[in-house]
Length: 501
View 1 (cartoon, rainbow, N blue to C red):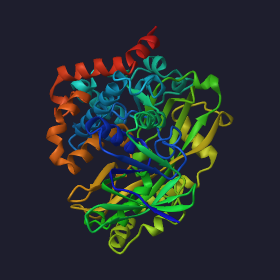
View 2: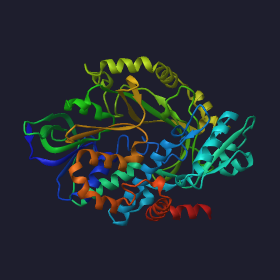
View 3: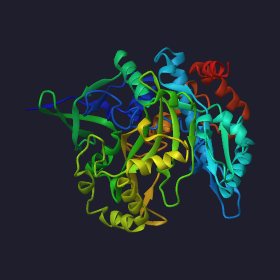
View 4: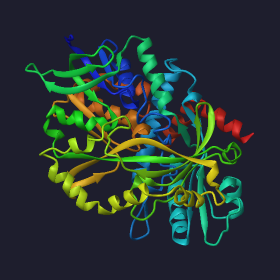
């Protein structure tokens, strides 16, 4: 049985943070547009956005050392850190607008004030961290950052990590109290629920998109499998956004647009150790990032995180990389194989040759015993006990592989928008810092795909995001204003005050 539906303005594929954000932006900018969303699972935010599948770091480059590079001459480049931080400030402004407008409520249910720290060991790493601190703390975006290489001070900051630690080499940490932990699954639910309540979105769960084709009159036809009623439906739209996490690559390939050619994907899964001893959990209150091992990919930077999950404080350590050929946690074992096409075969082979060290690293990670993982944890918590920790599998991430000026088959770490020349279809590929930058990335989609509307929309965008079109990095006064207003709206200043009492 099959159904053919009337044309709609916008179709969103995947009910994660990206589609929820784009849908929320469109509702404010063009409330009369018809928007349909298709999700193959039975509710929103279950894959990459889920609290257990996402590290939840409000990525603001406060603690992630891989966003700051040391040049051969010893200088520190914070360009990427500035960009990531600005993008997160954009997200906070939009969330604040939604809270102030009573579109979403109880922000403490999805965002938590939490110190962000970087922790290193060894003379060379301490030197790097000190130079990084000096460069960042003098920048208006990172004011309030502290540095210490004094073990006694570190005992105050990270008591659990310093307990019974033998300090045989230099150690140091930076700390900044304006960091956050974000439950992107909960935020996704709030955004989707608001859109449903306001009749701004027709959401279809248990509907998987099987094909996307261009019609003769220039519309996009989406073939959808309704699993509940076991029927095939055909929906057409003027604009389609593919926000299906790891599943986006296959759907992008089905569109046949030239921009989808010579792009591949490599799946990496993550695993975390979760502490089940509440006494241990209560001794730590921060997100603490270390340095990745030599040869390890950027997404494997070890970190010890306080998380608020299901109204309970939890402590997670990881990530340990794993490998599965699935592109989604709920995907198929044939995902990787079926993503290899004639046009990206050479690209994929070149990536395999170039990334032999990554393959070796993944194999080593997959065959690790629990005790080997515990040894990595003990670099953070010296007397961690195996019986206090369990291993959980997080979400799947698909890293983009593409041809660049640097050559064929370059593995990309980050988030990437691919859109057709006429702007009628766009897809989001890639991984971290993904969710944290969702608002900036979706604004990029709007700018690329609706250039003729942007001038008309700009006043409303600036109403929602006061820094839109301006560089925060070059405007310290605007930074202070943004921090003050967003912290108040998201109730982060109340949390910081409560922690200090």
